[in-house]
Length: 186
Image 1 (cartoon, one colour):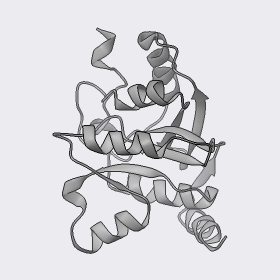
Image 2: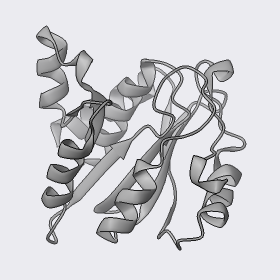
Image 3: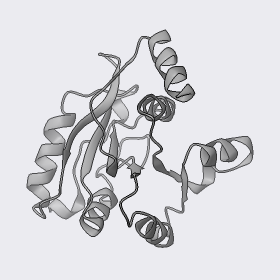
Image 4: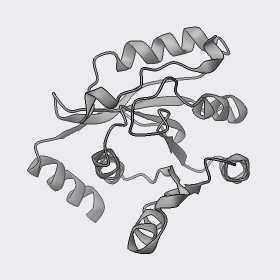
């Protein structure tokens, strides 16, 4: 309850608004991911909604006080060169009916790239969990939850939904945004 109040006060103080509904279980895709401020807003959003997100964060950031803080907020170390073991553990953790949310920045980096990482899609398919599109939009100063859907297996059609949703969302550094496109789309 205290975290919810702190987050609400902090968001109001910086004139940001949290919007939307988040499921109790699912795969959260966060975009645009263009700045370190994305993490701060993600944590405030999670606290505002009273949830814990198992946020995948590159292992290189888990050093010193930052590593302690990341672990305390639910972050999970990800070795981007060999993510299989971490993903396997998370898939096992997701079994059951307890609330469980994994957060993934599908762009994979705060710099502009050519494709999104498809792990969010594969995890949703393997677990049967829905995908919720989370967002930051700096012009409107909103952070929140967009549509939730189950992947159909038609990657291009599902990604069209993702592209439509993020078409009008702008991150802190718009030039760093990687448009939603998976290699699997061909």
